[in-house]
Length: 364
Image (cartoon, rainbow, N blue to C red; front, side, top):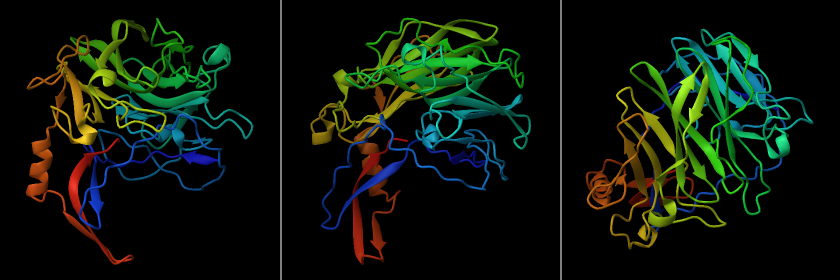
């Protein structure tokens, strides 16, 4: 049994860089990213350590154990938001340990007013509400949001077999009695028009306020249709959010290098919207042909993003004829030319010098 740890420290990176290197000074293509659709066999272990969650906004010292999980995959992907902190306190959503013979997909949540003493809530996705045939308990990729009234938990459920679709189906729940209320709603659909042709995974939620009104947006990667979709709230009352129809904000099939059975060069989406209603939905990817140096826009593995200026109601993109905003090749070349990154590394163990020849925007 692996403890669910929440680290009270902060590291903010716009996107990480991986250096392509070769002993003969020739570039090496970064390998494809493999999405963990099927997890390896569960390994049980225990620990007496206790720690806090990473917050995107604040950095802290100190540790406190919150709860436990079957494994650590609930915190695997950087585009999710497992923990939030605001004036109402701390709120976390995670995959919760429920015994050695129980599912690894039970969704739990926890609240703290000070980051030290935590109240936990169990089984937000019980049998009869979610999953294939209403089985529940196969939750993945949990995230958290919170407005002035309620904390919200988001997650996906497996509803398919993986042939051809895993049937990713997005849900949310909220504490009906408010922050630290202790009474969570039934699981609610994000996509009111969901059907088994859809395969929505790795939700990246965001909350902003338009004249005091809560505006919700959630971005998902579709593992079957291979594009990125955003759901925008059209109505909100007393914790219940009514989302509009899906909006395709990044068309991987048309404009980017697509995936195959071995994986994909396109990351999961990251979405954020500020209080002015301005925001972006971004992936790292190759433009179509960019992986072989044949793109008209750029050949670096780069950050590609669509933008909104109305709290996510509409999305646009494109500059210099490109369908989306992106970081161009000349920016990466400038970083190399000015030695913004070290261009050489000596590995003492193997007595080998590696020379970097290109930059690669990584996946988290």
